Amino acid sequence: MVVDIALGGVYAAAWLALGWAGRLKAALQGTIMGSNEWLMVAGFGAVFGAVYYVLDLPLAYYSGYVLPHRFGLATQNLAGWVADQLKGALVGGALGGMMLEVIYAVLRAAPDTWWLWVGGIMLLFNVILANLAPVLIMPIFNKFTPLGEEHAELAERLIRLAERANTRVRGVFRFDMSRRTKAANAALTGLGNTRRIILGDTLLAEFTPDEIETVLAHELGHHVNRDIPVGMAVSSVVTLGGLYLAFLGLRWGAAAFGFAGPADIAALPVLALVMGAYGLLTMPLGNAYSRWRERRADEYALRATGKGAAYVSALTRLANQNLAEAEPEAWVELLLYSHPAMGKRIAMAVEEAGRGRRGDTVTR
Image 1: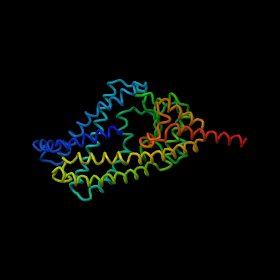
Image 2: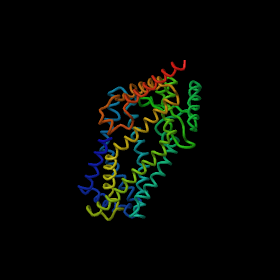
Image 3: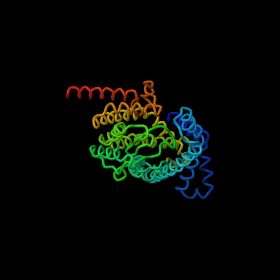
Image 4: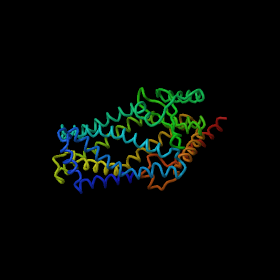
């Protein structure tokens, strides 16, 4: 992630320093796009994004295909990986292009307060996306099927667990993780009427029902602790800070590079540069906040199930199966980890499991 952000920063700076932004705008003005501001944003954004995508592709190939295969984690062939990249580019390009059009439309309409309006629109966009992703976006990449008779008892157990957490779900689904990886995972996805439990087929194949229950309880802990709405609110406030800096940066960039104004699409590299730098600087704080919420979800999983030993076993399996680094350097965890190091999570679960056994002994 850090390398990607650094590459993006160098890329955006090159567009400004070498004058590519102005030349691309001039070239587009000589086409049909020059007569329509919406088309100019679409054309400029497409070229700017596509060139970066091509430059970043070797890094994506190495980190997303070569390394997982080298360590025996991946099961996907090259054709499947390429297909996923194409689908990801199309979906990401469509969503990103839509947001870019909104940003520049608001920039043109409200040049002094656009950052406030865009912050609110992005929050609404994220809520809608979280609601629709399980039914519109995720099925593009994975096949989701309800758990069959073979796992009927497990599905019923997980639904009861969700009910105890006051969480309504629309069913328990299996998805085909094994098509790409040997890693395992589970999640609670969606909002409202699209919320559902999803279990990787690798999880179903390798984990016991008790282990799966504790893993899912962790995900339910995020719901009980209101991590989704609170997280969206916190993210919106942080994003608003970045947008305000972008507001200042675009004003400066317009004067420094001779753009027509902050709403000039040629200033897009300035917007990308400011938001990228801001994201890099705030990433450690965001990760610290995330680690705190993840620890609370672990604590909930242990309390809700009372199965500390099963959670220890589940976390150990996840660490081994997903090739997680159990004890990273402290500075690495501090800066880059959105979850507590797996070794710390396992140690906490071991302590809770021991506490539970002592309690059983006293009760007897």
